[in-house]
Image 1 (spheres, rainbow over the protein chains, first blue to last red):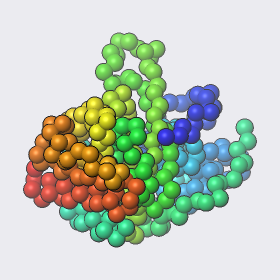
Image 2: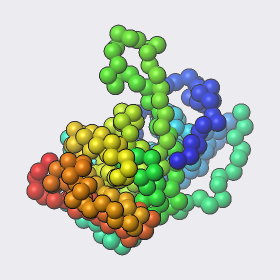
Image 3: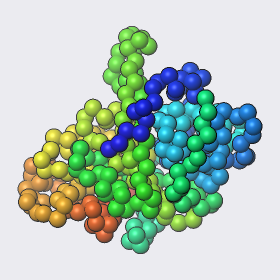
Length: 119
Length: 201
């Protein structure tokens, strides 16, 4: 397994997040789909601008993270900034699933089975 | 700091604009068990790689130890995706199953449809821990023996060696082959369906 960020020191993450390590929205799951609501504007932090370009079509948080080559936790912080500014929306079709309430309704499972059979 | 590098030329196909929900399946296994291979076999995109970073606080560390005691740990994982239809997409994660990584997976796996434990008969220890942890979490799972086409051990031998509950499906696969890899995921989804309709969890 490759380590995409091994060249990047913690200093870079500190700069990107302005030193924050918390404050990211807990409702942003690794696979929450996020989508840009506006185009980048001049003067915007480069990572924010890249996210807006990446998310012209819906994209999961982990996928944004992989393309930015930034850890998921850092990506969450950046996405939360954009959500707070109204530039990105997160799609939550129903309450976030939890271990107590799994996302597996029979119709969803049937849909997954059909798609897998068609692979 | 300038970040003007262009996007990779071969960008994966975007999801449809109507996509609104994503599901996830986790594939866990030790080093060399074939997680990445299985993800690659079923994914519609070349597998992507990223990292999760977390502090140890809250994972059994005494609060009184204070912030100085927080240590951040990073672990890499791969994932691929399968678009299900106009509104839904399935992400398949490959994650190392060794004990020291599990506190990271609790969050990543939360809400997952289920998990596949890829067994490497040379490293059964990794599988034991993963199986215990998934049972404790209540995450439905199946066990798959990735034998690369050679059947040295029977499934009965593996089930006995893992002391696997008779209700947990155990299948053989060749993770390099799409059809074989997809049958593992199908076995998992069928197992989850049986649990849901049977009301057994």
